[in-house]
Length: 365
Image 1 (cartoon, rainbow, N blue to C red):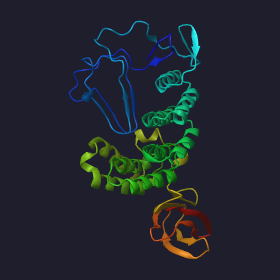
Image 2: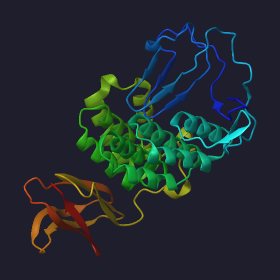
Image 3: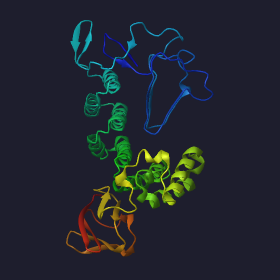
Image 4: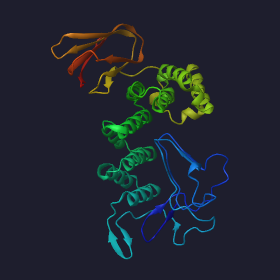
């Protein structure tokens, strides 16, 4: 990266020559963000068809070079620490508020390891900008900060924005599922992913959710059954459009899990406290809530036991018996469909052996 000392802006991936590629110069997908300003792309202006991104990702190749040898004078390699205070321009102080400036300053913060400042900038963009694309980009980059720093408070941001309407809410919910998996909250990752599958069936969102479910065993071997089922569904529904290398990697995880072993690649992301064969406790949740017309109720059992799961209305009358049978230890989920019911408050009760839990459901039509 390079720093412009007059503005304090940082340009990441700068002064490179990228061209003569057989297909694309840059490809960005699955909530990725590529920053590549002040680069030479083999022609000027760059050929836009050489930059491939899906609807979840960004590629910034602004300020492209006009030739391979005209990197701007005045850009110097970034030092270990970048000053993110008000940027000095022509000897005066200014407080940047426009999204372009803020995105550049956030990159500088991340490159210098100041993740708190970067997260603060992205939160400001999410709160203040009125441009939908800038909000979506800020949310993805805030998630990138979570990946780089492990700041668990960002999971709360994702949960909050997952309740937003439109594409911002969709993006936040998908990122939330990834964040739950990364923090080994397998139970929550599963039911958020299942909600995405139920709501966005047949789309790339469903495909990515199935890929996430198929990889859960890499975070917790006790999720092997979930991952195996998801892998089978992924191959059935999307086999021809999923990278063969990814399918092979997910299949390798499946083989390692079924043999009771963990591959070297998987060991790096599995801690000792996840190397169990069963969930450690009883737990039940549903998502989404409020819901319309259906919600996924997910629960985990640390032992084999007889399970009763029933839904009641606000007066305590039984509405639906969802489960009434012996079930094995592990992760379970079931869809409750409220299409035929009026809006209002409902309750669901799980009884598993000596364990009982009652929680609220809000149906809003």
